[in-house]
Length: 115
Image (cartoon, rainbow, N blue to C red; front, side, top):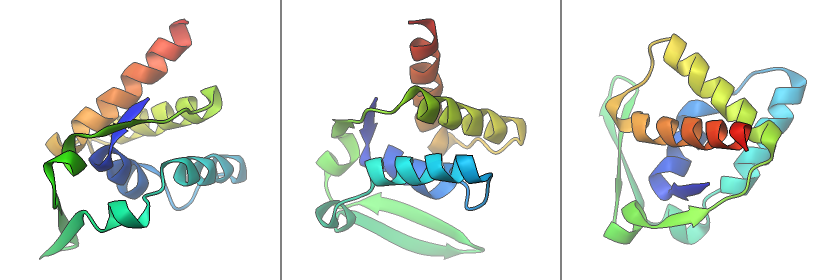
């Protein structure tokens, strides 16, 4: 699956839970390791606290926004991410800023299921 830096930040910070079953936390750890940001990538991210526990995330370069990197996830990891996106959807917690990332995960997971 091709992910931008923004996609990875959304997955790391809004999709993957802090608490879950033991098995699922193992999957979370594996996903986090795969998509972790390098020091160079971290230096391209600008985070601004806008209050009320809300943060505005920006990037220092256009390439940081548009460049996609290919990541390979196991079927189990993809199924888990799809499950998380479905849960987020059921809770009414989609937003305009997260929708494209979540749609990308759903699309990739659904394509993998049909192969």
